[in-house]
Length: 431
Image 1 (cartoon, helix red, strand yellow):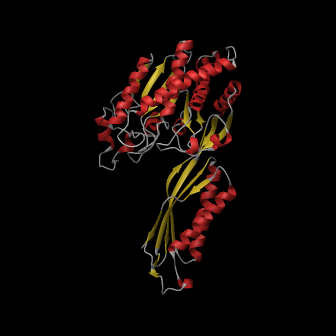
Image 2: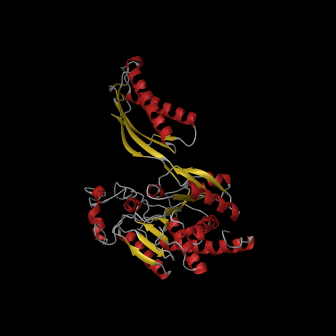
């Protein structure tokens, strides 16, 4: 491996067993920091979240890393390199969870970063290039209507200007919650960074592709772009018994036809395109009245920006035609847009090579969910690795990945970090 002697199969198995034990123990330890209830609930700037970040700070210090907070509550653990002028490599994920989530989403990436850096420090000492573990403050958007606060603050995609007026469901403002935990503008090291050389994120897949194919690691080609729309179809509410079928201006029937068109075309175009109608409301929504209004959401995702735009233009045009044919009013308003985020090609090739040399089955794949790596991709070369999720379940207490699969991902991450941080090529300015 790299400039070292190639690892024997026996050595690899012994190392995987060690990594299994370490990663499981860490995930169990971190899951304790949770609000009461099923699963793990650790929302941004709550008591449980703060306890977790403070505990992580202590853990990093105990490992011999230079631990610090920034002004938004991101936690860093630095394994200082012998050439501090070189841009560091960051690895990690987010501490926050959804309500009643599992113990792997986000937490696994943090655990993997700590376990990998601890192994590298104990085995090889100081690297050439600085390596940093990071526990990002927030990604999910579960408490406030803003996601990627941790990574976005580091990359400059988010800032204090974006939180003005934001409140949670209890009316607590974003700024009040942040200040209550000891963070805020000027409270600690500035969040925005321009010195990052690369970012690597390890995550559970949150889908069932790897499990179904019996593959241990997914090397993410790109994180899909997302566009979301609110579609409103207006007809005329009328008596269900006295209005002949041919004389109806049925908003729900029109909306149903549109939804069927959306599914048919998405299937025709094929993967990785997905299109979802997740919310539907009808007025007056009673059994004996022809619906006068139907409103629904459309969520479209694709890894290619041109294909994403093409499909969205197609469905809006076809929906409008369907409405006109039925003499229905029609509005389509886009309310969310995130462009596709391709991962760095050089890092992907290195990961392919690492998996091959370690004898770990891998494949390239697209991430259909958003992740912190898509924020970092705008700042520096970024890569993302997936390990299997049992049944494709995530954001649930039923979330599960076996210890061996967790360890395989950590092994790949560790080897990549060795190559980026310890090999002589690491003395190059660029990753």
